[in-house]
Image 1: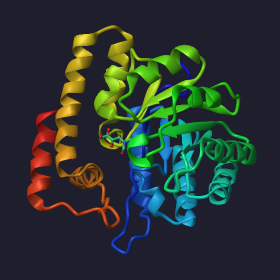
Image 2 (image 1 turned 90 degrees about the vertical axis):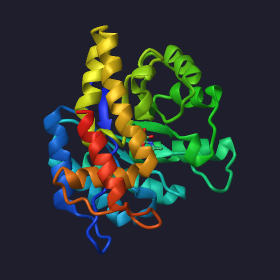
Image 3 (image 1 turned 90 degrees about the horizontal axis):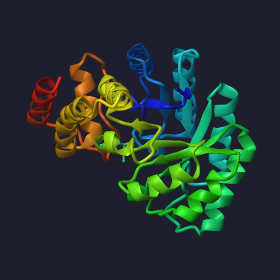
Image 4 (image 1 turned 60 degrees about the vertical axis):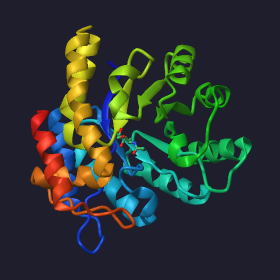
Amino acid sequence: MNSFHGIFPALLTPFHKDGSVNHPVLRQLVEMNVQKGVSGFYVCGSTGEALMLPARDRKDILETVIDQAAGRCKVIAHIGSMDTLTAEDLAVHAAKAGADAVSSVAPFYYGFSFDEIRGYYTDIADACGIPMVVYNIPLYSKVNLSEEQLSLFLSDDRFMGVKHTSSDFFLLERLSRRFPGKLFFNGFDEMFLSSLPAGATGGIGSTYNMMAEKFIRIHKLYLENRMEDAREEQRKANNIISALIRVGVMPGEKALLCKMGLDFGVCRRPFKTLHNEGIDMLWKIWQENQ
Ligand code: MN9
């Protein structure tokens, strides 16, 4: 199996009460997941709250993850930023720090043209010299990249694949057929099993922080053609994901990790902090679906 195939937790970021990054807990999270057998980590993505973090914190987080992973799995650094210069600086740092690849959300907010978006990606790829994964997440970025636009990236050697955080499996099927050598990371964990026949080579997701073992199993069962067992495992994961969506995904994930003994703290404001009833409901559903 290609070593970039498989399950990549999109790492959450643990914070101290003052908002600084809790590096010892980040190491614990990385170690727990290496032990579970993940294929790698996606660092400083949406789930890591990275778009709300200063560049210095993002660099420090990446260095901690690379150091703790110690070559036992792949590391993809999300370096997406509001401007090309910052993204290039983060990407060059990522390459020097030893990341295996970089990834970026499309530049958003100003409604850039596709030429501007393409220039952003190629400038970063040229600056850092390591492979790029296009992070396609129209729900958050409001940038809808078409099949033809994504194909322009995928036919370029500097681009290794796409993180497909979209329920458009028609698009996933078209692209993965057309570019069989590239990587397609499913982005919505609740649809992981369904993404595999559509052409996904693995997944990058937030719920893998605390339940990577379920998704590693789903992937394995799928490859062994044991579909009913795979569906049963996805059903249990989805019971938990439904509960997470009810309380707020990232605050809920941090609450679960706290329950599991990792001192994760809470998400940065304006994310909310969960009430005890929400945490109790979540923990009950978590336990019922183990
Ligand atoms: O990293 C995450 N996507 C977003 C990927 O945050 C938009 C997913 O893991 C979701 O949090 C998860 C729950 O919807 O699938």
